[in-house]
Image (tube, rainbow, N blue to C red):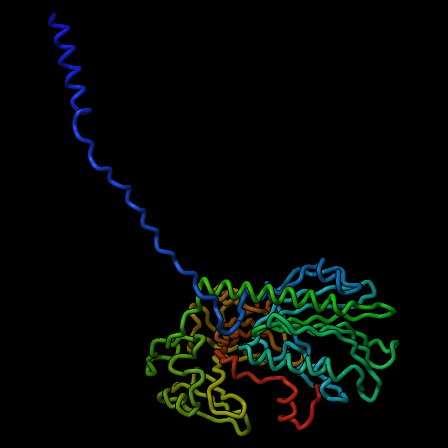
Length: 431
């Protein structure tokens, strides 16, 4: 009986909730959508490639061989540049056509290159050339475009010559490719030539040829144009994700300190600032003995009070703004090396140090040899076109090469090798 009563009582308790009024249903809260993160606006500033970004323009060996007849035996890509001369030589009519033989690398501040050897011992190269700003590269490309329009036939030292070319202008990239014949076919001066431009970069290739070889100029132009457009897109993506920082003024240097305590940077040396009026800049160095050049450009040599160290400050051509500041020498030419103990340093790198120390401290630069002047240096630059050059007295790959001088330079003030600039300097064009 007790068990039966307990079961009835339990059943009654379990039935109570069923008798209670049901609560009003509460609607599920509407989930709040997470705020959308807006996509960053695409970068639309200057297209200034720098350092290893130049590698984006390089064509592979297979791509070059597909459009340049005879190209074979390719080198590895190299962060180096060989300049043969300083830009003077034969005459052309129209003189615009001389642009093909004016080294495209003159005035550049960085490079990447590939070379090759053809079966008949003819050589070729592809060079990616960085200039200090878009304007410098654009003005150079203007000359090549003009030459492609005016030089279907021309004379080279009074010999009949021709340039059979194709041109493309699209996607912010301009490209010209063709074959150049100087004089008769058996003269030996026959070359395939191509040039492309985007932002502050020129991409150039040369390939000497003989016989009945024929380049597909349209296909070669398309290859250069497509790779340059791809590099442009990569840079826009990079600078959209990582906008370039606004340059800030460097901390003020103690002008009264020993010169060895000053720093060499992309903006100047100690209290000496690139871009400043040369008179004002030189006046910031107390107690220095100053001598000036007798002929343009305006160069001031500063010697410290005890005569143990010199700095050379040079204004840009035709102006008064400081363009370069040199500590040490750019070449020895048989003279003894400079004692770097009293000179400023670029970070941990000073005059007298192995060149490898500069290449380690400032990577992504370019090794340069200028054959005509006997100059060797390693240069590294910023996106704003400022440059530091570490000079040596021998090829940088030679064991024992040391830094004999360090230059801070405003690359935007470099001499330009456009046809108009040459006309203004000499009254005629003689590339």
